[in-house]
Length: 165
Image (cartoon, rainbow, N blue to C red; front, top):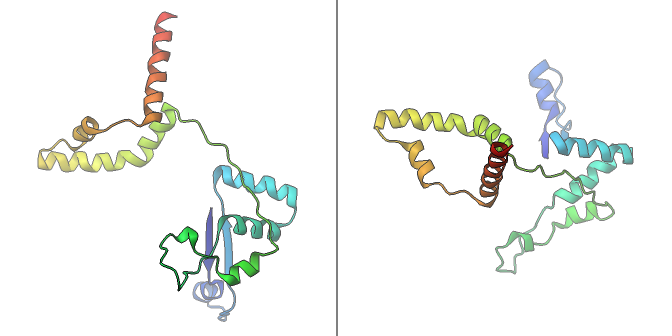
């Protein structure tokens, strides 16, 4: 979820040369993928865009006020900013649900291709110049986490079953 604020009056003035309206502001809640689908499902139930938006804000955002008489540095313990609490006092909270996707070798591969490969390419090229095997060292020194070990074990089991069949 993203919350976007911008001054629409200034944007329109700059873009189209319209008269400047300093009070024309725009606020957007932006959602992607499964979260967007969840919002649409809730909207079909609510039939009230503004009400749903307020419940989403109330469930996802809290403005805090640093206590002046406290030594706590844990922000989650700070009290809610009074004006925000007042604004949200009669607003409910909506729980947007998305189903966590099970990791798969294919998903990991897609992530590697899209997000990791460009950086690996960079260090492979730098390694050629510096005569260092940055990528080889990463692999040699890397450790799989529990999820990755499970994916590996599942892969090995599937291969063994495939060889028997």
